Amino acid sequence: MLERRLEPIIRQALDDFRVVVISGPRQAGKTTLVRRVMDGAGTFARLDRAATLHAALADPDGFATFGETPRAFDEVQRAGDPLIRAIKDTVDDDASRGQFLLNGSADFLTVPTISESLAGRAALLELWPFTQGEIHQTPDGFIDAAFSDPDRLLGGGASPLVTGDYLERACAGGFPEAVSMPPAARHTWFRDYLRTVIQRDIKDLSGARRTQDLPKLLKLLAARTAGELVVKNLHDDTGFGSRHTTEAYLGYLLMTYLVVLLPAWSRNLTSKAARRPKVHIVDSGLAAHVLGTSPQALARPTDPARGQIIETFAVNEMYRQASWHHGAITLHHFRDRGGAEIDVVAEAADGRLVAVEIKSGPAVDRSDARHLRRLRDKAPEDFICGVVLHTGERAYRLDDRILALPMSRLWTAS
Image (cartoon, rainbow, N blue to C red; front, side, top):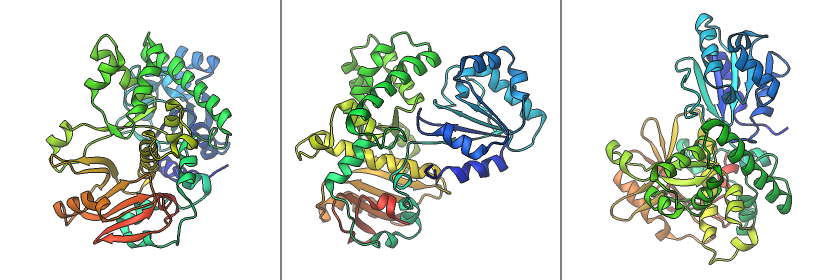
């Protein structure tokens, strides 16, 4: 069993909170991780089994208090508000830590059938598919090094990976079951995965009647992965009857972790809220499947999806690292009126910034860092470093506080 970076964070959260909630995409490994943390102790119940779900719905108060703690409820969103309210009542009567370990394949705070957030009682954590570091047992230390000591990123020697290797890894993605499969089997796995999420999970949680329209919407979003999300243009392409339908169905894909949004970065909070986010498919392997592409097709320099898939691959890695980082790190993209664009701006809670440009080729020169220099000069006190990630072998300095790094530094930096 591969070590998951979130495991020590879950264990600490059980010591600190009455309830721990782990959300994330279906098949990201939540059940396996919960069982590992439980290690045979406490009480484990799977709510995706009909008899167990019936018991939870028939007597939520009794279900919530049955068995030894910690009580782990798998796919807890299926039981809806009655069980969550029973859990709330239980922990309000007893302030002991580590009473409940809940997990689900939907964003706990956006499920329509759950109105109780357990605010003040629960730690909300997210488990994503494997990082490259988890797969290959390397440190996954890019974000930590970039904020604490960027010069560390220049060490480690030449990367053994070339562009084709990155394309292979991007198309494999990080879902534990799929990542080691041959391409034909992986295609079948992703196909059935989407059928399950769309035809069962979204239909059960939202009551949406036209779930047959969701694959079209997902394909349109995959074609936009790593691009700004303009909902009006998306709606025009869907052909759905109303923009409300498009927005609601986009919400369902976000709720079930098929897509994620990267908000715009700005020092002006009003401006930040008004600017468009970038959209990314939650896993580059899933994106490649939906687009019907392969490493061989992406190897053509003229393939329009190549840059998108590589950018989504790198953003997936950073998104997952940020989720377990000991400090509060949020990820954004940057675009200003002058045309400067930066793929990722990572911001610490104290305002420090790390900016990242992502290239799908091996060659980098100073012009690739021009927007990083612009941000550095705009926020000189907060700008820790800028990085141009590439698919070449060498790491080197491009400018003051700006580095060119092989993409593998995302997971090999310590």
